[in-house]
Length: 260
Image 1 (cartoon, rainbow, N blue to C red):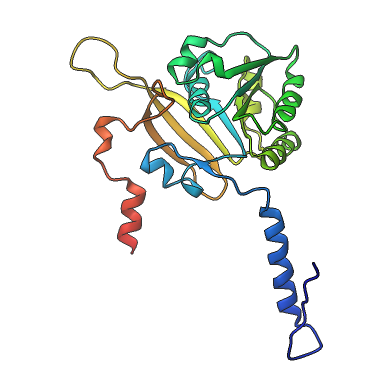
Image 2 (image 1 turned 120 degrees about the vertical axis):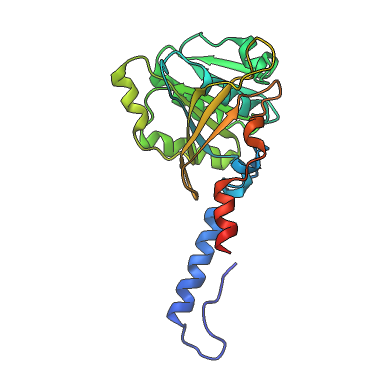
């Protein structure tokens, strides 16, 4: 269909109007395959901060372990599993090491019956597996465990996720100090999260309370970095605000209300 860029009152186009109209057409075309629903966390302070009210689906997200002995901790893995658990459909998990503990993932809501594992012999083969999986529209999410993620590779994954609507979660892992520095390099991911263990709240009786995490949103397209203390995923993959913090007003919301 041909669009006319000429004024009805004149046979000559108005340059500014023509440029504005072309820009609108380009934006509509670019948005055509990029508009997907979001996955809310169910925590007002988090969802209100994220564009669209939740984690963008059909997009690429990075999750990184932080804190002491981060190369051996599992908070980021369980955070990733919790997101996958709340997305309906099969899960493809691409990796090189057989070190996932299925009962632990189930405790975060991700049942073994939903997960297909694709094991690669080398890390450089993981990202092609992820990209191929993102073309399968029947999948809920594709998870890839890698240390290295170049800007070019991340752009390919982002485009593949946009095209199919399948969410991509890249779990950044490392095994040496030199590899740890690689996870700080830029990528095209829509969000980047750093997850670290945090002290649990004391319980009335002797024993362990529900695990807590320091959840850091270090990069978010369309929003600012932010940090929260949250209770770890339950058996349905849901995070929660600790009881001691639940009654407190979100500082950002308070500032916005004061500014009005």
